[in-house]
Image 1 (tube, rainbow, N blue to C red):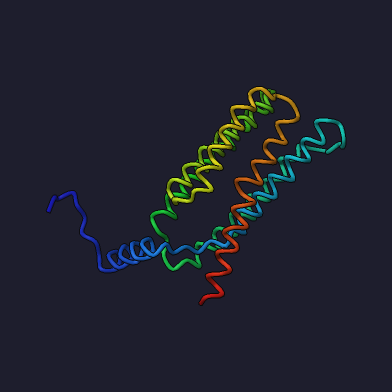
Image 2: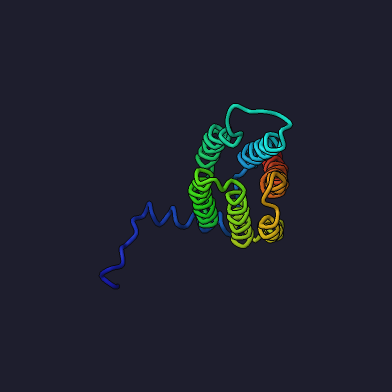
Length: 197
């Protein structure tokens, strides 16, 4: 045995075996509620921002600031669901890393707003969303996310030519496609699993 290799304790071995068993069974414990909360939050903020930009309504601050409490609610839901899982699989962890990277990158991208590039910010967010969605589809072998990721990347490319209020409508469509529809799909699968027990 290489001296750099660490021997697993019996508890670590058992955990690793459980993870591999649940991975092989295709086990997941995802209700889709977190995706729905975030998706409807992005949809609402995008439509409000569009309405503000075309002077349909006025708002005391950028509607996207409403995503801050939405993010905390969604994180709390995700935390609760993770605690209920019998085992956290390698797929679960990898997808969590992808979306954590997405959120950190999206927050960094919003700094472009302070430089006066609000529409470019949305283009960057669309690219990040498409990339994270496509990766999620590849990791989870979920064709809907693979196709949705590619469509989102096409939207991101098109958004370079739509640097006006209409870009928020592209973001709204993306929210429905990337978070809301999959959220409902996951919720239906989750309910069936719970009913079957």
